[in-house]
Length: 114
Image (cartoon, rainbow, N blue to C red):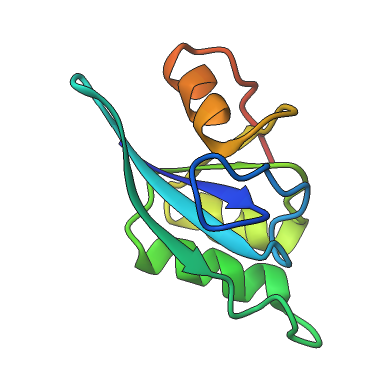
């Protein structure tokens, strides 16, 4: 499963961002039977967008072929786009990217249902 986490920085040790559409980065990780591996960090081009940042960020996630997103808050327009493309959404907990992905893999994160 390919997972994108809203992050304040580019690494798996970066803190999770509490916002989706205007987070600085998306850190993409791969979760498989062999464990968790870092894929890449993507700078969020929508961070300074005047309007529609959530939709633009959701489109980026879809284009990156992500299966699930871990974030603080996801707005209704962004969640609508993610739902439309079958991207699951999970509520982040305090901590860094890697910790949140580990919690997702262990079934310890709450699913966001919009």
